[in-house]
Length: 391
Ligand SMILES: Nc1ncnc2c1ncn2[C@@H]1O[C@H](COP(=O)(O)OP(=O)(O)OP(=O)(O)O)[C@@H](O)[C@H]1O
Ligand SMILES: [Mg+2]
Image 1 (cartoon, rainbow, N blue to C red):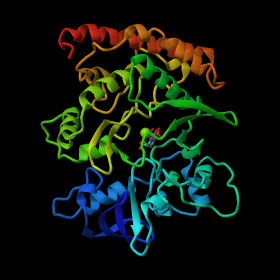
Image 2: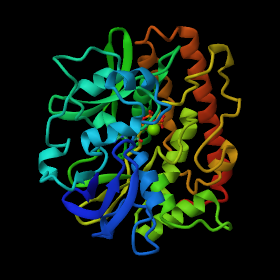
Image 3: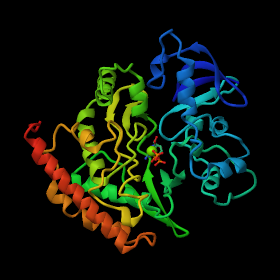
Image 4: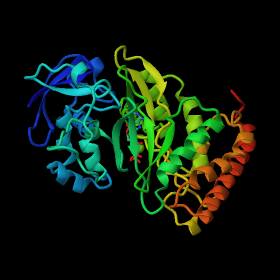
């Protein structure tokens, strides 16, 4: 199928997709490469086909998504990539789409920010019944990332992402709410706010879309790809250099915050797909770091209660697997409001007490473990405060 890759209203490159697999088999004509997704090589004057395919397939639901097999069966496809063209590759995290060459489609008529979309795919992903006859596949759920069960839904006119947790504690959605409270305690202004939704005895987190018709989320994965990594540079230095070459402001300060915040939550999953930057899609100007999202994989969510111990090392991401080493990257500890953190234990108790999947013993074990991490952070602040003067 001949298509044009579009960024909102701008034709970016003409290409050809395989009808069965949706793979990009040919890049035919570069049109306006300034509007390409970040991180696609253009060394030869035309976008690199392999990079484009990686980006395009990266928009599909990952094969590791919880419950994806049975959902694909109901949707009558073999692989998640085959869902991409059911919604022209449109998503609610950016403005890219594939316009079939023989169509007169306009972005204003198809985008999910301004047009309603069907709940069918979302309901199937959640193993819920589909209303009416036939399945309407026009949905941003076809292009959502991440391994947890999730769906986009319009709630009171707002585009919201609803995310499940995992067995046996279903803790991730509750963690997102604790994380929201932690942002407030830390005085952060750049975060996604999560609330809790209970449906049929199962907890879900709900957050609003932080992208709008004029913006896109660019993951740290794409930012990293925009610059060839020198073997002399650490992962941190490489990322900071890529940001500075692209012109993304304020990233170092943002990372200071993110590392401290993730340390407190014992987050084990801050991979490069779980943070990034926001860009204006019309002017291509960088707005700054994306608001902090996806903090559910934290607070010992998958540990048996008896194994929760605040002194045990927790594997960290994205720069070093060792927490001590990663925390050395924090250039300033002077801003941390430790007085506020004393009240974090009340937040944790408040949120977790609402869940029948959490008993008191587990809640207190988590409270103790977090308090140990607060103390450790305080020690780091005292110790490193000597070497790193406040900026
Ligand atoms: N509020 C939001 N607005 C716009 N896009 C979002 C929002 N929240 C998440 N996304 C996009 O959806 C993707 C998946 O969401 P999220 O990271 O929360 O899911 P996850 O299943 O917990 O992921 P992981 O596999 O990293 O654990 C994100 O990587 C991001 O691209
Ligand atoms: Mg994620």
